[in-house]
Image (cartoon, rainbow, N blue to C red):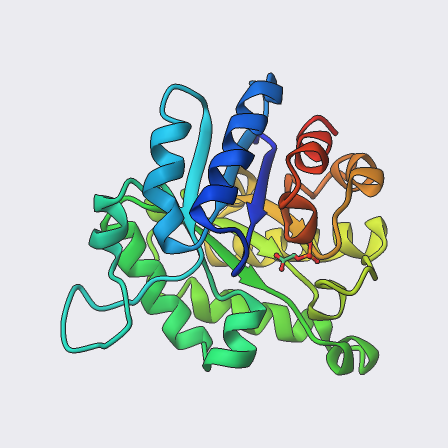
Length: 248
Ligand code: PGA
């Protein structure tokens, strides 16, 4: 049985002071132990949040990592550096990184390996854009992404990965995929994972939906059989909204 996993992607929002305020409020409100919860913050906020959530079950993660261990890569941060500041999770392959920072399936695959080598739990984002959805090739696109990203990942490691299906046209647009559309793609992703690994492995992998998840649509999304969680952007910035989603 997969544990539901609600993740908040803060993107490039919140100062350290604002992160502290969030943490104080959210800790107070958070009661639910049957759901995994984590916030994915900008790098400088990570150690602060790790400290503030240390006696709770609330996880803390980063939003990107470099795949090399170290080197002359100005501006980059390695998986071991994330480990050192206490990050338990890391998002990779988010569509904003693919769109604005040249992230490719190949680099996501290398990043996945780098995170697994440091025992950081990866959240791998995949998803089609609007043209691809309208062209009816969304399954083909997502299948290519999944196959490329999981290339060379062992069964033991695959079960540590969370996949986030985020249709690009639903991110930050207020336009959510219908629960049926989201469920269908999450089911398709599980089918590909079954094909790459086997049924047992595929059944253990957590698959989230992301894209305009809000307090008023979280319950319906979470009720879908193939959807195990949500990757929440905008609505994760407000502790009152985020707790409502966690309490779906
Ligand atoms: P959104 O973002 O919830 O604001 O649509 C989701 C994401 O980018 O992960």
